[in-house]
Amino acid sequence: MPSDVKAYVEMLYGGMPPPPDIVKTTLVHTLATSTHRLQIWAIRVGDPSWLEWHLTLHLPISSAEHNFPILLSSDGCWPHVVNTQAIDAVLEQGVCLAHFDRFQFAHDRPDGQRCGALYDHWPDSHCGAISAWAWGLRTNVQALMQIPALNHRKMGVIGHSRGGKAALLAGATDSHIAMTVTHNSGCAGAASFKIRDDTAETLMGLQATFPHWLGLACHDAQVLADLQSIDNWALLECFTGRHLCVLQANDDLWANPQGTRYAVARLKAHWESLGLGERLHHFTRTGGHAMSALDWSRAAQSLAQMETSS
Image 1 (tube, rainbow, N blue to C red):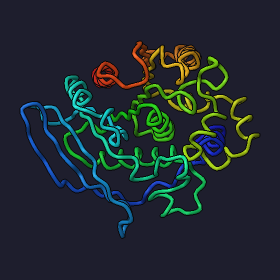
Image 2 (image 1 turned 180 degrees about the vertical axis):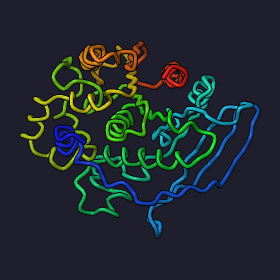
Image 3 (image 1 turned 120 degrees about the vertical axis):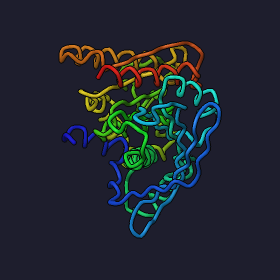
Image 4 (image 1 turned 90 degrees about the horizontal axis):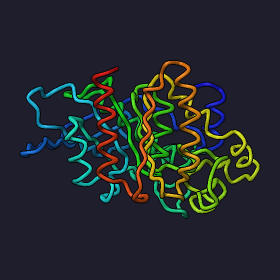
């Protein structure tokens, strides 16, 4: 990881937990329906194992039965995000959808600073919940690399809101992830810290409302000021050479659409100078913060098209 990116990740997110030495996968359930195939996998890390969770995998019905691109979401904790409409929208594009509950790794409540399985295992860690959830995404990518029927070169991670922040961090720090999709991720996500409307979330507001998301250093006002001056360029530049898909609702003012447009335009200009402009996908709509079937479809279509064109 370049030194400027490492410094940014350390300051904002508290760094990243170390990757597990051993990741084991076991198929525990499979079901075929008229519309798709369902698999549930038990994922274990460590030897002896110190953490286990279930990863749910939805695969299209296809005579090929292999080589599917795949989107991985940590938003399995939110049934209003990963729902039937989301699954159908992804499968219609010939893409698999995998999801898990990120609360297995770090809890998500303002009074739960550094609570959850990763903090039990690494009690001296300074990382916030976003880092812990990104670790969950990266570890599930390792698990998916062991599962047949998938195109392991075409792995995408996707996340909504706080899950979009985690997806960005996971994608920026893991080159196995070919496409990263972030939806209405706002502050500490795809949006610039410097460019925003008055109603948009700020770093200071994020620290005050959700202090458990960020690293321990963000309790220091000077660190927040330093991050504000640095902006999120270092993180977004990590995706150069891979694919980044930014989904944003123009009327989701809290998630800073103005700052997202600025950050995407700046990155787009840089990538176009390198002949990589087509690898940056930016979709906007109206309709508020919630993730819609259209958002899922656009994400899956971008991954499917990358499958045929890259």
